[in-house]
Length: 232
Length: 254
Image (cartoon, rainbow over all chains, first blue to last red; front, side, top):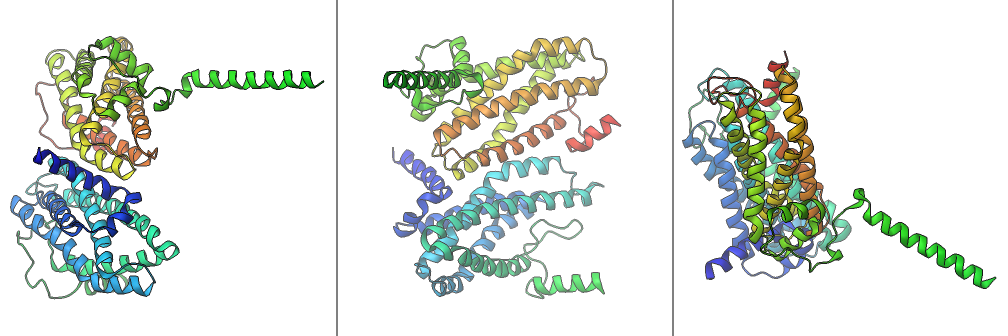
């Protein structure tokens, strides 16, 4: 009986996070919402992370299953202070904790969405040429492209949901707040993903948890050098 | 004068009501509406023929069952309808090449469709929840089984046509195109049934379900390539070579 009740609660929580109309009271009444979001991010992120790394090797799948939720959590907590400040500067009726909870809610939704696509990513991996075959370069490119599309689609939906919730709280200011939060999350998230690489696992390079000197250089330097080499 | 006006107005009202009745009875406007009679349900001992009739004519009765979360009493029958119909259609597909395909084609089509639906089920549930549907996974699964049964029934409806073409066409790509068309039409109506159900039981926003339908279609096409040969002759049961369905089709046509 207790087990069934818990299962129903989890189902209800997932459905609640998926529906923007009910999110405003969800943010107000705090009854263990933070651990729920954390659990969803960890489970959903680990499932999707495993599907990202499995093409390279099973060990890479284990590494990425740890790193992907870590990336989401570090980004959310790393930007929580500045996000809370920005929300208050933009006159949102939210405190620091609520703004963190709102960002975590959108990340939890992202993790749920990505986890729901995990069976399809495994299906794709099953069809890709193996790592040690002649078609590994093409396979790597296709795998990258499909996952970029899946992450972009899920990210857009998660942010749309966050926008609907912000609209209920902040009205006309919601767009500004969303852009400010998005900017902060992308700014830190891009750098953290650089530090925590590899995720997909480049063919030819050994399987490792982190690259040698993970804190040497930054995402933005790499992009700058790439542009410099392409243009000059 | 006043009486004339009254009669005219009365006639106009009658005509409008008549038009409304015609509109509601028109086959194009058969959008199921729970408000028709939310208490109407199927008896537990309903026969398979009765269930097929309800699936095609009065889907809102089955939507009522889903809403009450008691479609499980008819779930086994819906699955049976899908299984029998897909196996029967698979035999027709297999008859094009004969030999081992008599058995392998129905098995591949049935298990391939089931596997595809299971792979896509998590994303259907999450995307429908995002569009405002408040259904439990079991309710969503029941709705999906209903749409699979519709697909099966339509495939059986097309079976005689496919049978005629099987013994008339010699070229594999043409036969493949015919089967794709048949599947396409059946899928369209099956997904339409599912979308209507989600719209009736949820918020009415079906945009996400349309996106999901594209995902399902792509996965089904890839599954058909993975399980090849389904239509053509071959000594082997499955091909080890991995190919994307578009690349495979281009190779086949060239």
